[in-house]
Amino acid sequence: MPVITEKTPIRFRDELPAAVDVAIVGGGIASVMTAWFLQRAGKRVLICEKGRIAGEQSCRNWGFVRQAGRHAAELPIMMECMDTWQALQDEIGDEVGFRRPGSLFISQYDEELSGYAAWVEKVAKPHGLPSRMIDAKKVRALLNLPESEFKGGLHTERDGCAEPFTAIPAVARCLHAKGGVAIRENCATRCLDIEGGRAVGIHTEAGSVRAGQVLVAAGLWSSRLLGNHGLRFPQLAVNTTLGRTEPVNDLRQIVFGSTQACFRPRVDGGYTLTPGEIMEHELCFDTIRYGRQFLPALLSYRKHSSITLGRLDGLARRMLPSLKWTKDEKSPFEEVRVLDSSFSTRHFRKIPARMAQCLPPLAQLKIVEAWTGSADMTPDMLPALGEVKRYPGLHIASGLSGHGFGIGPGVGRVVADGLLGNTPKFDLSAFEFERFSRGAKLESDASSAAQQQA
Image 1: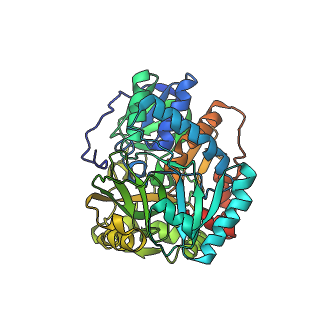
Image 2: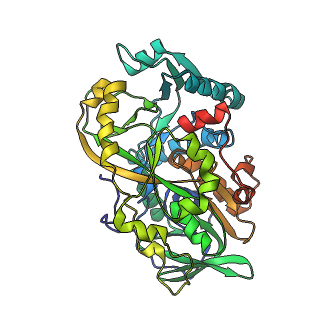
Image 3: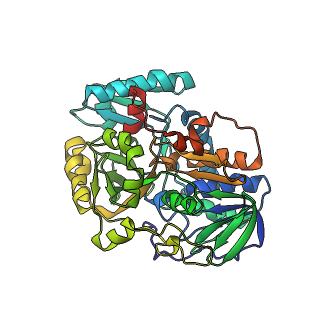
């Protein structure tokens, strides 16, 4: 199955219900997995997606399902999340594609290795996660390489991966078949329905829906939607380029990451490859609006990221976006159904070159498809999860910052608990929406550096 685009056939065409318990804006992994747990609680749910279910970053990501390198606030959620991935695999099968071959994040730089070691001591061990540092000899053995320039790495034996192209569409079909969850693709939510200072539904291009509660899980479009209601949510989009190879006979069963190159094994017998931690941000209005708050993150990633003009034919639209509209006006979400980010030929060409340096056998493989995905980043690289205090009844699950696919089922459980009024199982203070008004920014200690790199 190829990557999802605007040309992918519409699969979900449910009529809009007059009212539901929870209306969810967006059809990515956070949305679908929240609906998964709400359905189990007997709630009536609507998922309203402007384009296609999992059409943007939920299908265009690396496919890592990792515990390694997670922020201390995320790790306990992620550890529990591994069981949910296994349950999805057991129920739905290889369209989910969840396996646990382990992960290996390596480096030839002492500073990076020190960051990994600090993360093991400060984060992994206190949470009981059996991650460990390994030396160069063990790195070579795990990668089946006679020699390597890498000095060591961070090895987590029970980490995993899954299949972004197919996993979330498969979960959505399973949800839909069970009933109680209406799904509407190609239907943009133009505005939230706010009455008396409370969120009471959504206004879509096809009509309005009343809801007891509303969840905004619209990925990198969340900031635009919330901004139309006076809520400041700092987000910037960064692009990464990936490729998938033809099947091979001697597939290395491990999730591999470094600043130079990354790969994971696929269910189809090939690899997903990336040229390491290379990210591009296309200049836009939000670059200026949120730039100061993102400055620590931009400086931290300066060796591996760049700001570009992007497509010139879209520069005016990005620099002069619509900031206000009503429920009766066409919204920005109807202009771009499925974001197909500018493909970076320059970065694509780096894949075989960097693989030749790190893992020469992989550099010879034929790449049969390549694509670019856009992840929505927050200033501190953590998502916003939970109720938005300004508007009771409004919840958010967005800003997953490029590592949301793996933790997506855990996010769904946490957010569903909040919508159901359950006592939180985890400390969620690090994910409060309101932290951005207090100037939340990227941490700078060694263990957080490991989070950025892994």
